[in-house]
Image 1: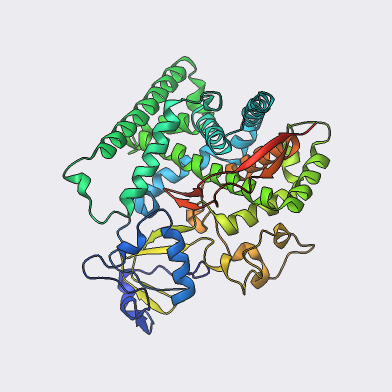
Image 2: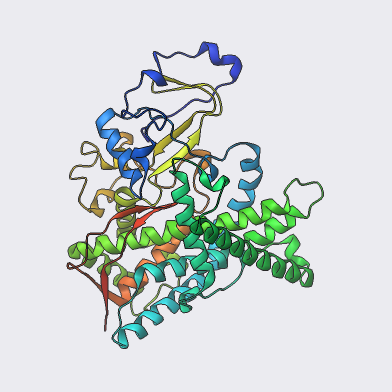
Length: 450
């Protein structure tokens, strides 16, 4: 389970030619109990920390028993391939660049809300507002709609999505899938949230289809991912169904909210606890933006190396996706260990080498300078080859570039307009794993800069 391990996929006919000295049964690992295996150790909201600790105890590759995983993190095959192209096309560099002014407008709206809140003597709810902004941005770029959840504290879509994420996470580590036989009140509430989210997406799809009827040119030149998927779903030669359309629309929203919002929330926490680092970042942002209070120019995104470094260091310490679940598509050998086809493998994106003292000295400290160097480092010394917060290869996160631009726009706006003060009286911030890993709170006070 090491992020540096590379697995060679082989055809079944080649299986008897594989060279290995051990099988999964030979690997070390935590001791389980009859029937439940290691599942009892994976309950709660910090099971990702348990997996990380096992790396240090048992080494880079180890075995666990009876850990049931599935769903979006282990999706493979033709279904993934046919939809990947549409998703990546809808989040291309050109699409994001065209959306950049809208992203700036949405961020400005949040900054204005915060300034008004502070002027009234109230405290900003950073955790809530960062999620709301991320929801506005992903729905805006993926579906072409401005929900303005930032300005609506009671928007039902944000509530429904939060409810779904919590329920999916609890089911993922449940000892028994009781919900297949009976429903508790919390399950019925989650079912209702799922229904409401689907209805909202269906409404947006219907409105988009109507708009495309009024503007036929959108079929030739879609302006967002939803329009592109509608064109594909209506092609009689395509096997892209309406259910694929709904599922991908929901997946794009789910995947674009907590990942980016949590990354920014973690960065704000870390910056507030490291005032010297925050001052360096503020100085860089002030120099790039000048008299402006917001980034309005696309080219400015290339002029924030310290912000890039702070984000990379945040991902090393507190990645929203610390582990990925994969499935062996064929019999293969990883680290001299035979893995049979169909086996589920958990691979750390950052919590392996990223928290290894030999790879990152003083690894518990927040030091963006680790990622800044005059010349490109040698392969073995390049920190970017030791942590993979967005995955890698064919499974590289399709929203990676959007996330990087969103982080730059939002964090630069925060540092340009506000000072950060960490609330030392607040309870310690915990790592909470729902569907993604986020902070239990963002105990940071904002003060408007004059």
